[in-house]
Amino acid sequence: MSTPAILSLEKSGIDFQVHNYEVSESVGEGYGEAVAAAIGVDPARVFKTLLATVDADYVVAIVPVTKRVSMKKLASAAGGRKADMAATGDAERLTGYVSGGISPLGQRRRLRTFLDKSADNYKQICVSAGKRGLQVELPVMALVELVGGEMADLVEMSSVLPTQTTP
Image 1 (tube, rainbow, N blue to C red):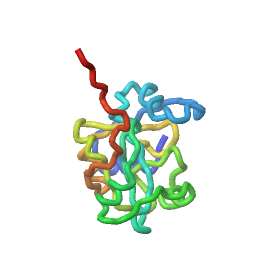
Image 2 (image 1 turned 90 degrees about the vertical axis):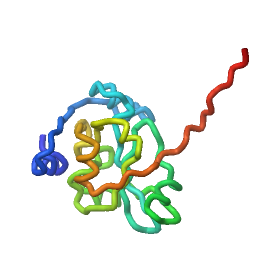
Image 3 (image 1 turned 90 degrees about the horizontal axis):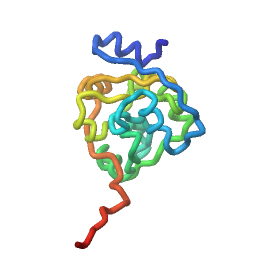
């Protein structure tokens, strides 16, 4: 299966691996973790692609599927004041991909892109290959280079504090 994301990777000459998977949409909130399990990859290495607006300019945020993007941190990374998630229709129109299969690669329009700094913990991460049921695994720095991305702290801190035990 060829998508604009896969075509852009082939054109770049970067080594990458495509993972096919099947996951029920009914999984809901744990969809990203289910994708990671289906392709046999640590969920912390599977990243989702989100579209947002920062002060009315569209941007792309790439964050681990196990985390939530912090709108405050995204706005700060982009040098703006306010960030909001983009409407699904706008995200699909701007990228050329269907929601749930939006890849940071091969988008119709190149947007300013931010990758969560946790990606630095890995040599390779997985992102959507541009279609539901397809992930592409590639070197982190190759992804940054291909999308003209910037590394930044983008995720919300865990709302669960470590428990303290007393002896």
